[in-house]
Length: 219
Image 1 (cartoon, one colour):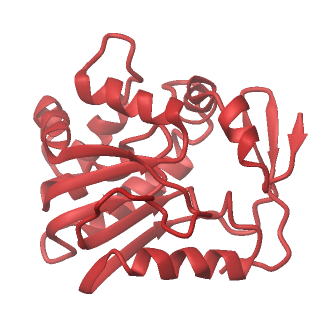
Image 2 (cartoon, one colour):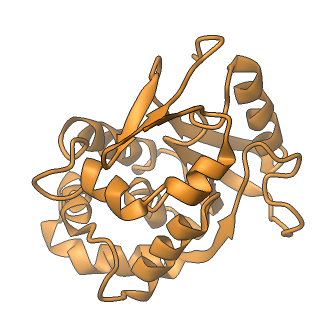
């Protein structure tokens, strides 16, 4: 099944976070478990290591059903607000935060971050630190005039976004427009940290192919 990037209804009706997790992140079968996850986790570790970025508030834009990109940041920020466009993704985030028995299992990823930090025994403490720091799971919309609608948002020391903006943004202009909107949520001197994929034209969620056509190359 192939669909245009510009149809939010596809995401609402067709995106299955369980399929997404098993396609890309599940132990032993996810195609991102090695190369991409290693790249992201190491870069986030270096970004938020001692001497790196830190602060009071971090806003995470477009998390999907995932938490892996926040595992290093949770050590150096007091408050984290994460968000996604889809209710089904937000539900998975809430399940993990509540420690529901059917929540997605990120243990293998948490263990890898602990190894990067030099303390493999820190596994459960790391999970609890992130759960404690995340105070809200909000709806966000990259294409809306106000990405968080009427929700009162604090100004952040840092905004992160991982594998999100390249999906709804059809071209470079749309990409820069959402960055301008996110900039309004930053404190003076704040930072935006983006993990993205260049020149991607589609991706799979389970057996469904999600098309990403581009008018301009996003750099």
